[in-house]
Amino acid sequence: MAQVLIIGAGRAGTSMAAALTRAGISVDGPWGRGTNLREIPADVTTVIIATSDDAIGTVAAQLPVHPERVVLHLSGSLGVDVLRPHPRRGALHPLVPLPTTEIGAARLASGITFAVAGDSEAWTLVQRLNGTAVEVRDEDRVRYHAAACVAANHVVALLGHVERIAQSAGLPLDAFLALTRAAVDDVEHFGPERALTGPASRGDWSTLDRHLEALDPAERASYRAGVGMALELLTGKSPSLGHDEPVDDVPEVRSASGASLVS
Image (cartoon, rainbow, N blue to C red; front, side, top):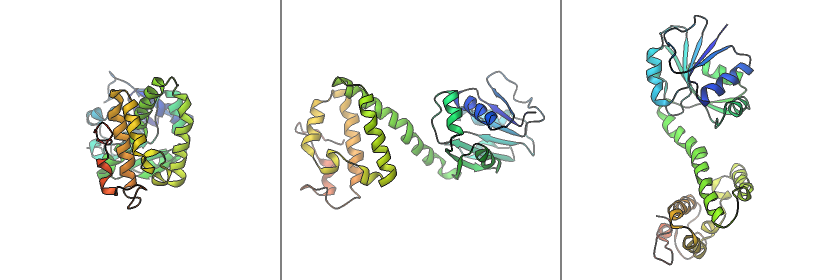
């Protein structure tokens, strides 16, 4: 007998369906487009909406309201109010990428963190998946999700930047991934400020200048943005970066061509 109904047949919905099934929970779905959302089986106690954020409110509005049925969504950026008028509502966002159903299902049950809110059933499902639940209030969820996007999506985009520059030097991206993994490990152990190394951290402006001069012009804006983030991280570290310019002047550092290194 079905206990959980999943609506949304994308990667999130199919991954969650597989993970919950492996955890011993009876799952109906995922339901995709064209299904009649008003015909919820009587044995469904929990509905999980795994659609895009823009569709969650519309889907919730089409579901019949039941006083005991829990309605959850998997969005990181939306609060539980989007699920009104359902009396038992909550949010359950897995803090992990779900690139395929198989990989996603394995990751969902691997002890990851879930951002939860609302009904206690969200916490119960996290426990069934052997995860860790952290409560993120509605008013904080957009900032939480922005941080999640930077942690995953922006890092992937940054590695695309690495790949293009590496290829211009005749090297594959794989040659640099151990460096990336080590840097992430250092952040975990020491924190971002102490983990930062490289020319920006030691005020080696001539090296940064030569980097910019050597790069394809199409890559310079992304590189400057990275230098800017490194210098922003360092401004709270000490009153001096180990060179003659005070911290307040760091954003004004310019290359030999007169272009700003960070803007």
